[in-house]
Length: 157
Image (cartoon, rainbow, N blue to C red):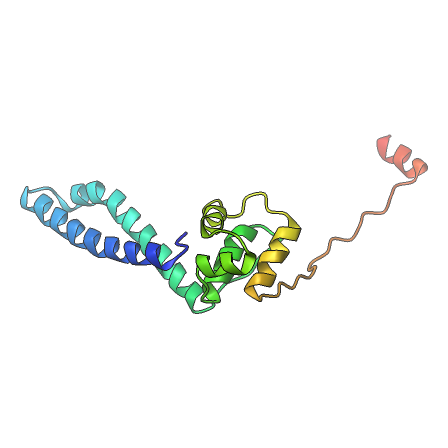
C-alpha cells in the first residue's frame, strides 16, 4: 500500500522505468528467435509485478479523490485509517502534529497498518482526522432457540 506522496512518486517513476525495461527485454528476446509463448513465459513474472505496482498507484489515486470503500467488521481498520488520512489530504506529519506525536510514530504505525490498535486509539486518530465512522449491523442472524431437554433427548434417539 502506498502511504504518502514520496512513495507515490517513486512508484510512478519505477513504473515508467520498468515499462521501458520490459519493452527492451521483449525486443531482445524476440531478436534471439524465441517463440512468443517462451517470451511470454519469461516476461510474465515481470508483467505481474508491473501490474501490481500499477494497481497500487491507481489505488492511491482513488484515495486522494476520496474513494475509500467500505469497512466490514473492522477488518482492515488500519488500512482504512491510512486511507482516510490520504483522502483528507493530510500528510503523516500533519496527523502526527494533530496527535501530538512524532512523525516517525505515525509512519511506523502506518507501515504496520496499526496492527493491534485499540478502539480508544482508533477513535483518537479518527477525531484528529476530523472523520466520523458510522457502523450498523446488517444481516443479523436470528438466534437459534434453545432446545428443551425432551427435544434434545428426542433428537439424540
